[in-house]
Every structure is written in C-alpha cells, then in structure tokens.
Image 1: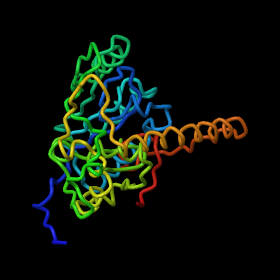
Image 2: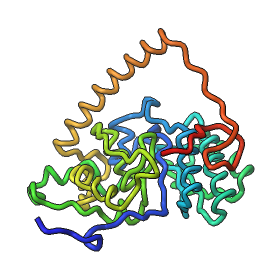
Image 3: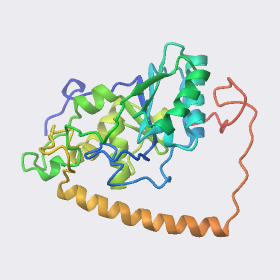
Image 4: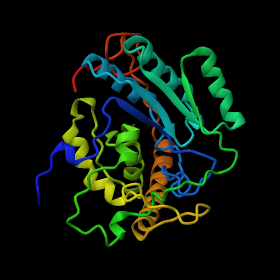
Length: 290
C-alpha cells in the first residue's frame, strides 16, 4: 500500500468547530445527515454544557484558537440547556477571540425560535443560520448509502475524507470528544464506534485522518451518492443493520438508566472557584491536567 502525504487527503479545517448540541429534531427530513428520523434522540446524546465549557477553557489555556464555532444537530434549540450552551460559546468569543464567528443553526420553528430571539437580545453578535424549513427538506445526498456496500470500493481502498465533510464542516465535537467532521460524530453514534479523540490535547491531523478509515466507508457523502427520489430514505444494507443494532442498544440503555435512577440518588455536583482557563467564576471541572 503506498505511503500517502497530507496533500493526498481532504484535510479537516482545524480552526472550525461544529458542536453537536442534540440529535433531537421534529422536522423529519428524509436522508438527514444526522439520522434524526432513523435514529431518533432519547436525550442520552444531548451535549453536556460543562464539557463544552471545559474544552473551550482548555483550548484557551494552550493557545488553541477557534475562528468559527457552530451549534448544530438536530435542532439545537430543542436542547433543554440551549441557552446555557449559547452562553458558554459566547463567553469564549468575548473573552478569548472576539473575531470568532459564534453561530447556531435553526430551522425556524415558531416555538423554538423564541429561544433564538431571547439569545439575540442578550448576545447581538450571535450569528444565526436559519434554514427556514416550513416542510421537511429533501436532501440531495443519500448519506446512508455506504461506500462499503458499493463494489467500486474494495477492501484495499484508501479512504481520504471528502470536501463536504472535512473541508466545509471543520471538526465535530460531542460528549465523547472530537471527530474529523461533524457527520462523523453522527455516524459514530449510530454504529457505536468508540473513535472520538477525548481531549483537546490529543487532537492532531494524524489522529483525525485515522478516523477516515472508520467513518468514510459508511458515509454516502464520500461517494457523493445522490438520492434518486428525494422524498424517501435511501438506506444500504450496512446502515439497515446499524439502525437495527442502534435501536436495540438504546432500548437496553433506557431500561438500565431507568433502573439506576430509581435506585440511586443523584450525586451533588462539585463546586469550583474558577474555570479551567482561570478566566471566570466556576461552573465546570477546574482540573488543569489533560
């Protein structure tokens, strides 16, 4: 197998971050690239605001600059702590990089948009990407048509990322950590992949490229597979098995979670006096080691 150089790959945009706030969405668009219809959210994947806060504080401490941070999903405003997540993002912008484009997506549901308007009054420089979906969007690409199910991509194929994911999106981030693109976070969720880079200290181009071999074989964006009929789901066999297994895992997890909640009192959250970056009053883990 030939040794590849960085120039042989679609390299992720290291200064752009897409934060997967939630996989909840009530729009039900076919071929959604976050799989919100076929792998619906039960809240288990909702972003913990303290994890975002901790990561951004550590980024500031080591001199890592984010030029764009975007809340996405799902519909971000459906997160129960949406306003806290926005507050964390805007604090990073205001204290560490005023030039950072701090953005949230929304599809402009009247009920959800009240939260957006409230945040805009508090943070006028918050940017809003309004997709304005009055009806479910008909996506062009069928993300659930896996290249691994196409004979064109044999076992020796070297997956190199793609323009849509890596070049346009930037890095993905969720409760588990970092991904080569935001779609990769959703793929890892459905397939149960433990491939996230857990800490900002471990993020490197090599580590991100290594994720390509796991997620690209599953992603219809890689082979630019178009939905022949945009009004229905296009799902290859690998994805059918993945959705079946995902829903089984979630059913089991819900049962375990309900049992634990019934038997175990919730621990009190620890209090701290400062942020991890030493910049503000506490609301997150203040440990300074990786």
